[in-house]
Length: 253
Ligand code: NAP
Image: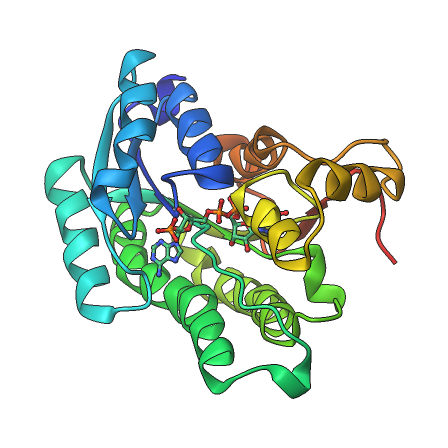
């Protein structure tokens, strides 16, 4: 794609799962991709897959909830690849528990990674986007934003990201920056595999039970989410901003 050839995309939590699929997809669409995750070494697989396919990628280790590390990571991306034009706030963790058993740490960890992390990354990247007069921010929300038993922390964070998305869309629109959210339903990744392990159900059984409730009759794949993110990240989505797209195989209650 000629319009995106020189542009740089940053994908957080891109060592695996939805983030890795998104990094690969954006590289295929012509972006140079910063593959950012907690552990730089863990990014190697995604970087190798991108470069093997002829793309450009840089592994960056960074805890998105740490302001100094975020500032350093974004500076490193700007030096190593170029100014970030696309940011996908995908890094995420679960600390599920019913409210009466949820610890302060469970609450704070989830808020820090999802909400503080998205805030810090967006604040650091927007400077480059505003300077360029063009940018795309895509935040990962979740169907859990609508409420999900055992996820008071996660659902609050994912609903919070929807408000964050709409506010940034209003603030940054006049600088050519659009901001949208993708809210996946059940996607088969290590995250949902860890949920199966936590509740003592086989992952295949959990997927089958989830698929039975999903109108298209299957659970999602990371690529299903990457496709939606790629739309929001693209040149052609310039008049779409402040939206939340549920990628869940059907409508949600
Ligand atoms: P995943 O497989 O667990 O991958 C998440 C990635 O984020 C991991 O590589 C993880 O690194 C990284 N990460 C965690 N904390 C971080 C931090 N502080 N700084 C930088 N990176 C960090 O998850 P996924 O299923 O692909 O989910 C990706 C996003 O989609 C998340 O925001 C999730 O909430 C959202 N989502 C997922 C589903 C689903 O069904 N899977 C549904 C709705 C929304 P480590 O491996 O080192 O922890």
